[in-house]
Length: 195
Image 1 (cartoon, rainbow, N blue to C red):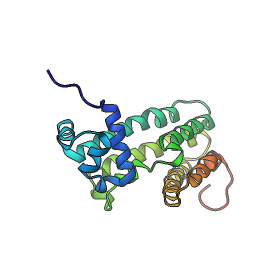
Image 2 (cartoon, helix red, strand yellow):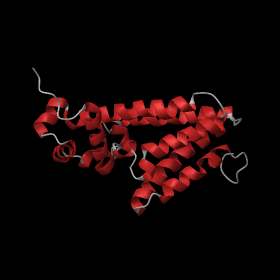
Image 3 (spheres, rainbow, N blue to C red):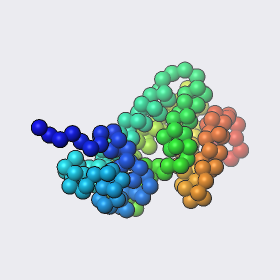
Image 4 (tube, rainbow, N blue to C red):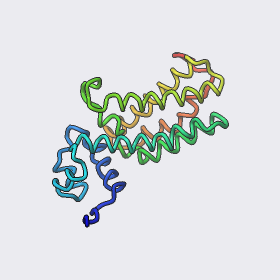
């Protein structure tokens, strides 16, 4: 009879996710992952025979499932565009702990983004998010090119605000971004850029 696991899978993946978000893929040594998980290295290898890469893939799969349930599904749900965008903003705020946590997709990116082990997963996640948000903006009355431009810009603003928040040691840039995001996305007349 197998011994019960010291830590449930969901809690283990949460701890591993925290490590990858904090230090990135390259710096997440097995020693660091072992300490954060509370498991010995041998136990980690037993749970993840593929090592650190398998751990990161499973963390990514969990993040993708969360993105699908909490971001993409509400954006695709129908209803008023502003309601769907507000739901997305609330979920983004929760996922990034109000700006205290770094973007997992960014932290798992390789310095040569097109060659990293997670390049396709990261690209697909961003693309799915941009497409879903673009569709909401099309529903709000923007043409497809403008909707796509605004969706890409919104994701860039969100991700950039996380980087700035982390660099400055304050969540203020992220919170300011969230506070203005609905207006950024839905205001019809803007000066400069695609409108």
